[in-house]
Image (cartoon, rainbow, N blue to C red; front, side):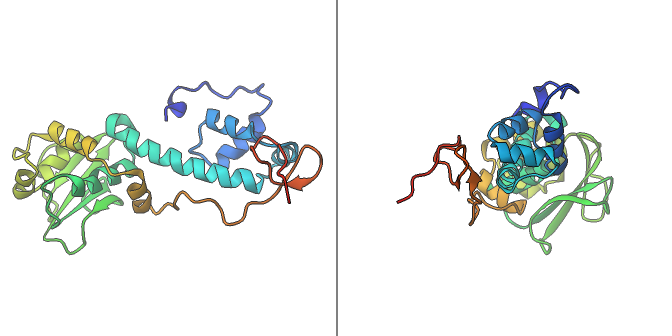
Length: 239
């Protein structure tokens, strides 16, 4: 989860620099340490393919799965680190409201860039809901709560405090947070009732954790082609 935050930079003299940079061009959310571990599982033929600038199908499939998981982890990390909030985190926060006891499903919430009519970043609720509120992201970690006509409800504040100000009185009361200044308490509820990864994966329209229908055979250490039993090159036994 924290690989991308604390890892050392890639050195020019690193013998795997070319392969790592190739992988990260295609899968930018993969950290260097995760990419290095993935490349450590490559066999000789796959390493040669990478050297020539082509990512083998097996590594491509694994990297795609790892990038999806890294994206999900980043979304959850944003719950706890304000500076790491992404649109995925905003999607997680808004849609977690349906898990909070007392929530009433008659509100449309949106997060948009810059202002009321800005680019949509995240949303929750039906388009035809009784109420609509917008959080305008005006800078990193700062939002404005706006009503359905674009009127400002409160000054610039963090995601949770702005969301608390955007919620109608009835919604705040039903969740046990009647005061508009209870943004910190709302944050604790969001953390407590955060959506499971499977639900967030569906909201982000990411493919489920399934194995590919067809997995290409690999070149084995003895020169044959087949499927290793352990992932480390032990040939499979056929009967």
